[in-house]
Image (tube, rainbow, N blue to C red; front, side, top):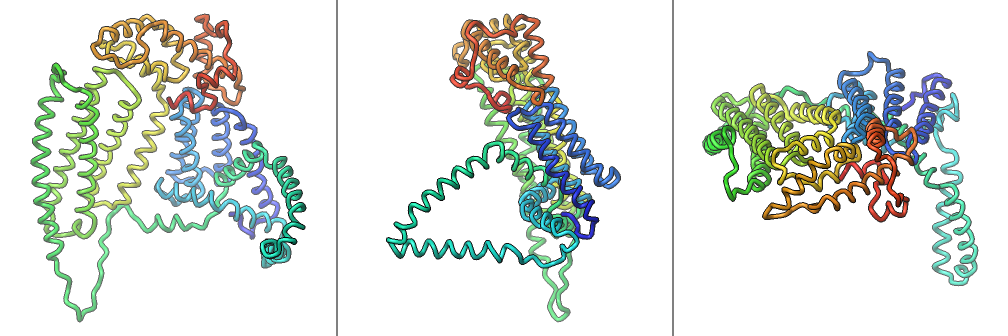
Length: 544
């Protein structure tokens, strides 16, 4: 929010940055997919934030978030993936909030601050503009036009409607006038509020929220109440009252001891079985449901780990952390956390064996990423019980872990990695061939150049007792692949420099070298693309 004590010229310059940025936003993104334009806009936002505040004023969390945003935006240009785009947008919002409030530490409260800032843009912008237009007389109370014109008009409208309801002849007299008035207003609004106008208003709102602070530091005050170290809060009772009994805390400790002894023994048996069965020399027996073993079994074990974390958080939620007789309870809790970590490794190996049998897919990679974050959560939970640390510490550290994993994952070309892995897989009769067609367009040259391997995988599928893929014959698959290629060529030729990505450029050049950069005899136009489900937006191709 602009301070009224600043020099008027400085305040006008600061205010004009927002519409200038909105004009660039409109020029970069209107009727365009996300590509090079997102990297340029990310650089613009970082440049403005750094120049206005200075590099030294940016906190370490703000620097990490903004660097993550620039890295993700660069990966949008390199890979053109939906994950990189999502990572850039999330980093943009969080980095802006952290840069506007250097004392903020957590992503959880940064997201809240960004939301509050966005909601306060209209009122703050109106107040700031009014202050600038009044110049140095901004300290005057704001009576003016709001009470002189707007309020009487609103009251008159209410009475006008009441008179229409109460007097039929007055209603008939004014009906024609109202119809004409609504037609004129409708035509006027349709001319003013076009799709481009609404998009520009969205650009103005977004730039104002990203580049300007419009909120009171209320969210910061909420965050500053919390610390990483768990502090004991003593409630002092009047001296004439008897001290509180420790029986309730001791009963809870004994209950926790019984619970942790039982679950540690149960988990010990499970871990011994998994280490002997899954860790070393695992083979798939005949008539064994590997799908149930991995899908239902994996998620059941992951939910058991999450539930274990909730139980430990409940046991060590307050004064139990400072109870003098809780040493055994802590040891059992730390042992349970360690055993859950071993269980997490077993779950990872289950997914690994499933990939070894059925190949890679997005969900299988997602399970690995989610499991890695669960293991990070177990490590932080171990530290929380041993130190002890606060729940705020857990949320803060694990939120940053999610952020780092999200940015790191955006740096990988997952589609090409999945296709290469599955094409080289030594169990061709269990590879999901249909998934090749569901990948993004950048795998097209890879699939075309390895079509013989796809044919071999289809041949193996035809010998399976249970056929679960849709494309079993090369002619059908090739026709679907050609339609996918034509949709890509049409999209590539239609987009301009704003949507340029190296992934699309590399794909087009590879298809050109293979003589596949020209559509077939029946070119794919807009109507044909609508029939086959052309991915007109930037996300439709990648999300499948």
